[in-house]
Image: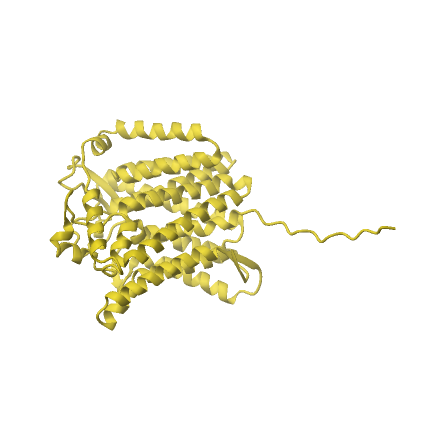
Length: 434
């Protein structure tokens, strides 16, 4: 952990929490370059917290320097790929600024939020805001499903695609929708909503384990139920698999392995008892093998520096040798962040991304173990959310979905607040021999 000297402010921490957590409420609408509407509130939050860091006067804070360095190393490999693949200054700026800018943003987010949330009380309030916005999103989704609400940019619900075995149903998108990209024919925002929910459910569960107050436990239990119902209404299989693995990971750390296995089995039973989900799991195929194969084909033809950021879909649709795989025709992105990085940035990007995730996992384990016993439920909940993210990231490339990735890095930045303070060694005592 690296130290800088400043003094946090409680009201600033609350405002920043609301801005970051509330960022999910804005749909994806492109504004300029890589900037979109769902970036506005998190950017404002980082600006406000950065202002607090720069102009405060006292107090020591620590931030995870090695994790920040991994983010910056990854950004450096993207800059190398951009320099290698660009043919003009404008193209260089566009390629270099998109994903590398996101990584630099995440690094600044971690530094600023680790500074602001320097005590368990502030971090707990931030997590309650996180759970509250997830519950509000869930209530909106359930209302939209009940009333069949279809708002602008796909907000609310959308029809299940005609190729699905559950065609004729609708699934919820909530506010995780937006304008379609050039090569998109249908919105897949339900996947992103589900990815957000597999972050919020373990965190809300961790708060439930921590709190002793009966009325808070009742509120959190209702919140968990609403979020799980909404998760099922997305009809996303990968999210349920990710949540199950996250629950097992939480049980392992809490030494409640039997209970976590029981919950895992109960989840399987519930999933298979819902006719639409049973059909999805047992009767519907998937296209992941073809998508992953296309990403490998792209990487194999451009191993040094990839094809460059932002060119994946245009390269895919124009190259039959890439999209025509042994598993069928690939018609979307890799749906696996590591393979996307390999295709976009080459071998250095792939290695940097693996290093980042290895450091993230190590960081999460270390700070769960360092957390005070009274906060273990909370930190295990955050750890479970990170595990869920990393699992589903290999099926839905969440690293390339800032609306979800920002929420995950927000949770990461809160973990150090629950670490037990290190006790300083007492100076040696002088004894007389007389």
